[in-house]
Image 1 (cartoon, rainbow, N blue to C red):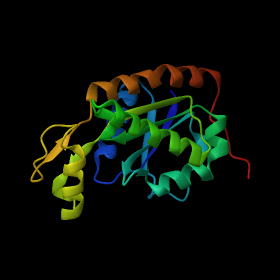
Image 2: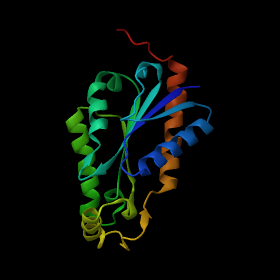
Image 3: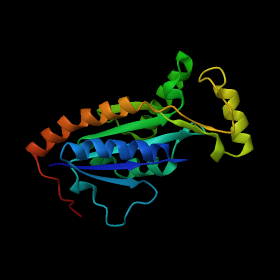
Image 4: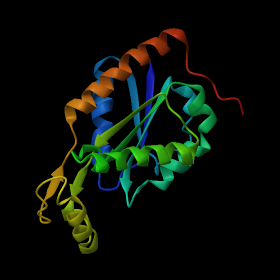
Length: 192
């Protein structure tokens, strides 16, 4: 069995739910998964102990969480030397309006440029609008932005746009990579 590490960033918790679903699917296929929020990394976390590293982050105010950007930059050599993937969570990722979907792609491109990390596998996943957790300014701004592209915008309730079938299929696509990597090598030991 291979060891998968999922490091993620979240604002209101939707990316947490996505990371946990990916972990559930991969664990169901016999692999070991550790899920860690990127701003709560244990001091003894050794990335070299994992066969595969999955990083995820959500978009807020046009950017992925700064602590995820920092995590990737700080671990760029190791992330680039072993199997890894990235998932980006945003509401733009589910927009049927091509120019808005293109915004989600631009966020992903910007993340890769800013960090210098070019994982072989990336995916855009729909997030959520959690109006009940936003301040009034964010509620109004997000309502204006999404009114014509996502449908209802009642700011007294939340909307989930995550395609859970897409998330499950993505997680399942990682399993053969974990199987292959597990067969080919043991986790690297860090040399410090």
